[in-house]
Image 1 (cartoon, rainbow, N blue to C red):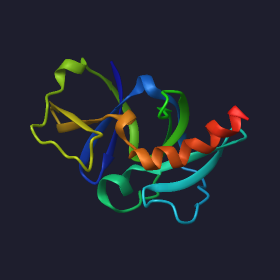
Image 2: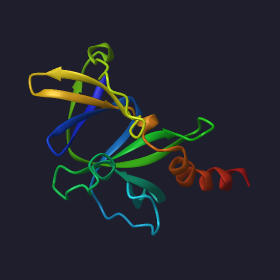
Image 3: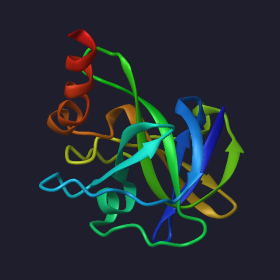
Image 4: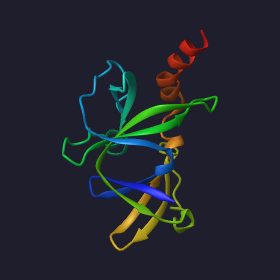
Length: 156
């Protein structure tokens, strides 16, 4: 399976590339007032506004650093009914991919109800890599906030 690797501070994380649509350079994000901290805002993706989550804000409580290796990963994300929507994820040092068998990852042995997206770990020559389970990334209320209006607009 192909994974996209990124970093938050010195820790490395992996996202399943099967859910990945495109990786873009970090561009201007339009902030949306009164959103949860991890919601960076939205950007224009091929003529459509796309919500963006800042993974550094989510994982570390601080915004991602603007650097050449900071990217926006456009991912497929399911709503409550399972319909897929596009979601941007800002990630630092998102410049590498690697192939591994999902069975190479091992459970952490620690459950985090506040961060259900933190999946199993893989050990390699550079240390540990933690799998981020994208479909578990957003709390239900945030997911519904980001995707409910689009679903309602399509239904009308």
